[in-house]
Image 1: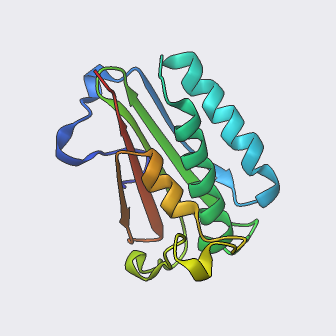
Image 2 (image 1 turned 90 degrees about the vertical axis):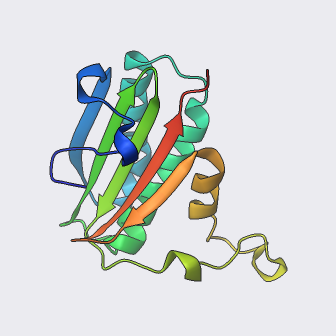
Length: 153
């Protein structure tokens, strides 16, 4: 993720066809996660007509919580960058980037394994992958999670 710009794989999003774009830094504060997600979702609802906003909202909330808690260690002096690009004909790209050192996605315990079913945490990335069509991570100058939801035709 380059500074100030959302990018999708394989050119799915054409800059001249964007219907909505947000790129901002928010405080790394657990207490503001719900209000930030609500504010951003209101912008998306106003700018685009979309069917699965609940799944997108949950994915954004989980990614932002992971960035604040795990990536930035609840450090209120840190910020989390949120970048959302909507192209009405193709889909929504949501990018959440923290300043953390990263993690190994393959080492995340399976939340459906019997020993993890009653755990109080550990389902965020699993849920994101269930609701979004494509999810990938980049670990350069922090950790960025890219979440793509394609438009169903």
